[in-house]
Image (cartoon, rainbow, N blue to C red; front, side, top):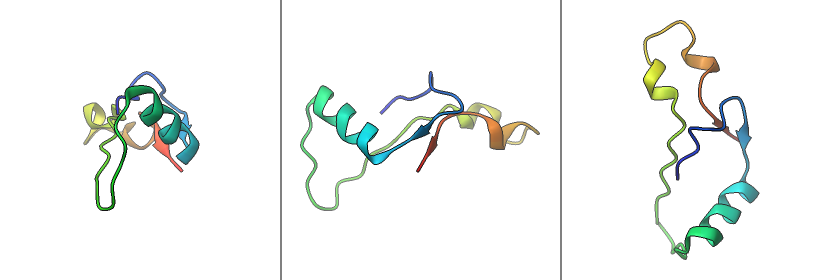
Length: 56
């Protein structure tokens, strides 16, 4: 899932469910969901912790 445009937002379980319903896959037990938060572009920089989108 690509949430790079939601910097500073806390992505909730409901957000994940809504996005999965929109894009179509039905999760099965032990499936993994990858979430691109854009924080990786600031890894090893002072502003790393405040970048990207969080999950909660």
